[in-house]
Structure formats: C-alpha cells, structure tokens
Length: 160
Image 1: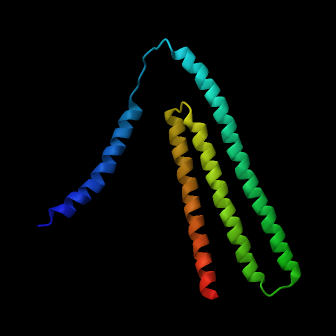
Image 2 (image 1 turned 90 degrees about the vertical axis):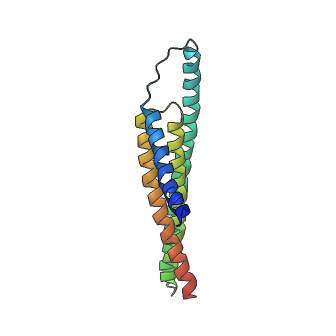
Image 3 (image 1 turned 90 degrees about the horizontal axis):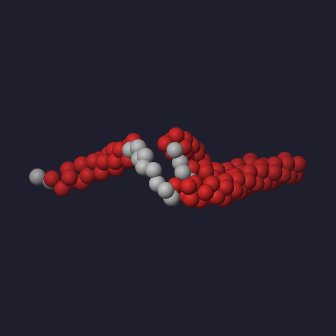
C-alpha cells in the first residue's frame, strides 16, 4: 500500500493547521509583567513610532505619485491618439490600460508597505487583524490586476 502519499497529504493539512492554532494561542496570551525598564522602552517606542510614521507617510506619497502620474500620462497618450485620427486607436487604448494597470499594481504595493510599516511598531490584535484584512484585499486586487495584464499582453502577442 502507498502510505507515503497519505502521510504527505496529512502533513500538508496538519502543519498549516498546527501553525494557525499556535498563532491563535500566542495572540490570546496576556503577558502582564511589570518591568522597571518599561519607561525607557516607552521612550524608544515613541521615537520608533514617529520614524515609522514618517516612513509610512512617504510610502503613501510614493503611491499617490505613481498612480497620479500614471493617470496623467494615460490621459495624455489617449487624447493624443484620439486627436491623431490613427487606425491604431484600439491598440493604443490597450497600451494605455496596460501602463495604467502596471502603475496601479505598483501603487498598491506601496500602500501595502505603508500599512505594514504602521502596524510594525507595538501592534494590538485589532491592528494585526485590520492589517491582515487590508493586505488580503489589496493582494487580491493586485492578483486580478496582474492576471488581466498578462492576459492582455498574451492576446496582443498572439494577434501580431
């Protein structure tokens, strides 16, 4: 009998479940020890939160710049094609969509980085769950955006 594939499939199921269970247990632990060095740690945490806040704001600004510049570029390229009365109008809209899609994907990556930075310093359970939800949504958006970009690029290559 083939017991090896059965062991592998059980291992593939039990290992992630064990890790999730351990994570839930760790999140439910309440550690409330008083420490004399806690005051110095609070000062360090406040400085760290300030620095990380600036870094997260920088990542958000970078996301806004990337997306904003891509939108402006896309509009100008599209308007140029519309007023040029070229036969390649349909092809140019696909190019604009691809360029805008790539910029949106990059902008989403910057916003995910910003959210991770904001949660990195002394997160609460609520912060972690909010980050998980935000990252999951943005990752799904990015996944479908990338998939659409690849499909359009492949169809363009087949049309040539």
